[in-house]
Length: 251
Ligand code: PEP
Image (cartoon, rainbow, N blue to C red; front, side):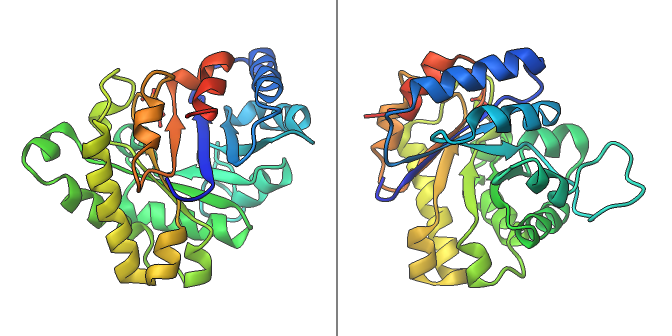
């Protein structure tokens, strides 16, 4: 890890309004002395406004879990980048594998969402990752490479400088099965190589490539010790404030 780390907690479809408020307050309290790490919480959208009030003037930033790429209109149930920015979101997770697998999101749709986020000044966290089948067939980097290339197509260097990439092997999400630090590092290095090819060395060196997939207090240190792992996207383990605080304070 060679740059300011980014540790984000993705609460997915967990926590009621009051639970979200309590969890956010605990995380803010437990991480108040932490320096050198960007700490991000992504609660369910219904709790964004409330959590924004709680983490105001703390170390913690707010993220949405998704957006829709249109600015406004007849898109029942969807939220625009502008709406997310208006409640205080700084970041937005885009292309999470659960969105891709359960809700049919495509690489092209992910590209539109990244563009929409950037237009509103949000910082996208682009998620990519291969299935177990693709990994076992030796096609992990090939899959991730095509996801990265399509998702980032048309971005200028200035725009790319505001994107973080989360490598999240699908077989490691919510399964308790983590990629070994070496396997993760191999894909992270591959992603950095693609970014260098597309945007040059300055941008590729600066881009934060974070790992997601069963990150926990007891495996975060070995993952963060890898040269190309710049942070973590944490699902299940972000629902307990003390465990998440330990992840944020990785050694
Ligand atoms: C995630 O939601 O992005 C994730 C990595 O989940 P978990 O940490 O539970 O595997």
